[in-house]
Length: 450
Image 1: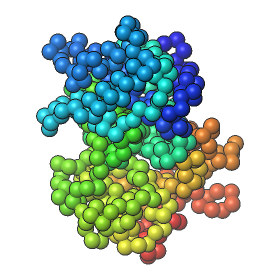
Image 2 (image 1 turned 60 degrees about the vertical axis):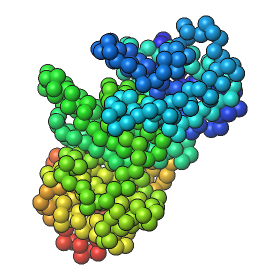
Image 3 (image 1 turned 45 degrees about the vertical axis):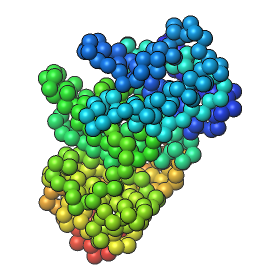
Image 4 (image 1 turned 30 degrees about the horizontal axis):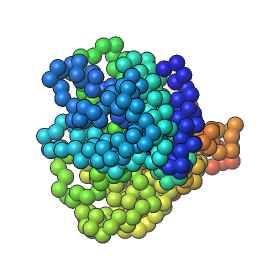
């Protein structure tokens, strides 16, 4: 597609004329299910080439190549005829595809992707125009797939300003920094129990690919390990759909991404087989869970705050010697209710909480102005020392915004300090990098807001 860069603008211009699309979130959701079918169809071409016995889980007349591909419009599938087909045939069938525990992931994701998806468009002629624009994408070309992966990132980025949908998107600079500092190794497993649109998953894969490139050449078995290393869960349908498409674009044929709630299992039932080498997460915060969910947690860790419950899950599902990087709001650092204090006590006594990186206030703007932090900890003997490092807004701006977001380069000073740690004081005499002993943090009644 020659005009790849104008892809989003072209779609937006068409959708603006449709009475059914109300705001950015609906526009992106509309693009999402159509893109999923287009990307999935391209994947199926590969699977058919590799296995002549391959059978699609999607009935033939519902496959993208049949109804959306521009060359297959001889029957005039547009206008009311197309709308009727989408609303009364495509959606009901895909939402009710028969799947069982034995259905391969790469097939069952079709039903889970469509379970709560919606067609918002009311004008079948405009819907046909959108299908034509999407159909121009050539996922048979590696260059075009890679280029579109970048464009998909911009589609996800727009979620930040799409009202509450922004909660599913962690700025890429942050996910890249966390993945880089965790230093992935080929063969390790990584989990995100509330994965949103898959930012941590794609940053993890990107880092592993850099490890692969540095090695020069690796075996097919090692390459397979890169793409089988992730495990993810997302509770809400819309980000789940975006995440699965994101993973297909990143070359994962059978992404282990599940639609569900990670908090519905009893914490004490987890064993080592449920644990992972690395956990990268931005747990949803500010939410509250029902009482029956809280019953899955030991009394000392029960909380009304979703982020606290996820922190408990992370601790129980991190392998011995495993590494975690987790984003938490300021409220976790200074909160002193029973669950928070017990979680922080465990971080200091049962784990090695080695670093807390304090992020600038506007990193998640415009979705939220809540100040956030990254906790880095390992499931190993604690050293009794926790470093705090403050990342500041760069001098050339007052705050981050949608048009001027945080970039990976804004972590450069922190990355340089990471490998050569020393205490730093800023020009006003305030600590920018400083360590505290576990005893000092315990004596402060577990107030980490230092």
